[in-house]
Image (cartoon, rainbow, N blue to C red; front, side):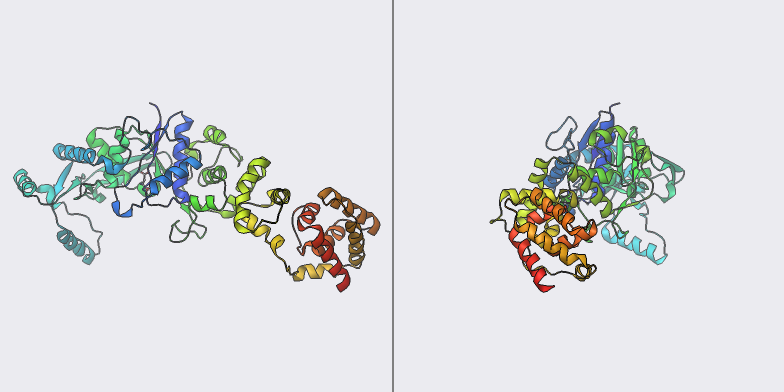
Length: 480
Ligand code: GLU
């Protein structure tokens, strides 16, 4: 059977990186077998729905280069692909279950359920619907339906025995049927619960592999009972542990945890985000860490997904992203990085040559796009303070004064202000002052840039500009 997986987000307007990682796993499982990747929008909880969220899901998948084989915008044969448009289907299947005796109408009011809940609370036992409506007679049901009393449809659970769930990651799990509540399948507003819709949809859409968060694992026994009641084949389950935030807590929008779009807007590259996320909770059969999509499709083996939660680690993400930046071709890099500079600084009196040189000089120094703004701030700051570390260094050796004097004389004579000429001056200074290494580079860097560290020295001095360099070196000579 051809592999079919689905990404089934709820359109709540926020896709945290844990959701995206699930989508990646789903995509890889499908593509590894030349299968189909399906997008299904799970909007049955209408209260959580956010306008525009579907576009945002599309945008994320598109930026990550996940081709959607079937979805709301390119339906296949098993649509609609938005759950709120499938209400009639859920009703039909819920009623089918009722007629087969695997579900029943429940007319209990909220007040009645609250009363039951309170009794459970007072006895300090978890609340479980007591099945009161499961014993209504045909006549009683008909009478209530005819008089228009609101109802829900509940799944009738077996009272004893066990239900087995086989999961590719967690293995075989046995759930005692006695702990399974007669859960609601169809709500009184006609919307299905997730617990019902996922089964009906996964079956009707021909989903072969269900990959989702492990918070659904315990519930899966109930889903299997539904598959069994309908006589349907269960899919292969792949439940995946959580991605926790940097603080070790659950990722949440409220805690300001990174969503894909936040990362994208900060200049993390979608390919790098995907590469980073796939290694959160999955490990390849080798120690390779950087993967192209084709390599991932080849290497991905869902049995190597970890059972334990993983923790989002921005340092590792930065490392992966920096790798992708370094490997971009220069033209593409400039196109990507320039907006971050333009948004932060007034470049109206800068030449394109200067701007491009700046961006390329920092190419191997930044981990994500917006970092360029912080890294080059000193170049746009008129009054640069030297910190104590710099000041201490400048007093640390007797040769420094002489080195800088020589360098100033050399720099003055440059006609054509470029990195090659500046480098020549550095080399001549080396010869004349008879200093090398740290005692050559550090005094020059500190005097000219007021910084202890930075990219390649000659390129950096070029960026500062001749006028400013001369002024800083002269000020130094005067003040010493
Ligand atoms: N709509 C569910 C969620 O966003 C999807 C769970 C699933 O993949 O079955 O958590």
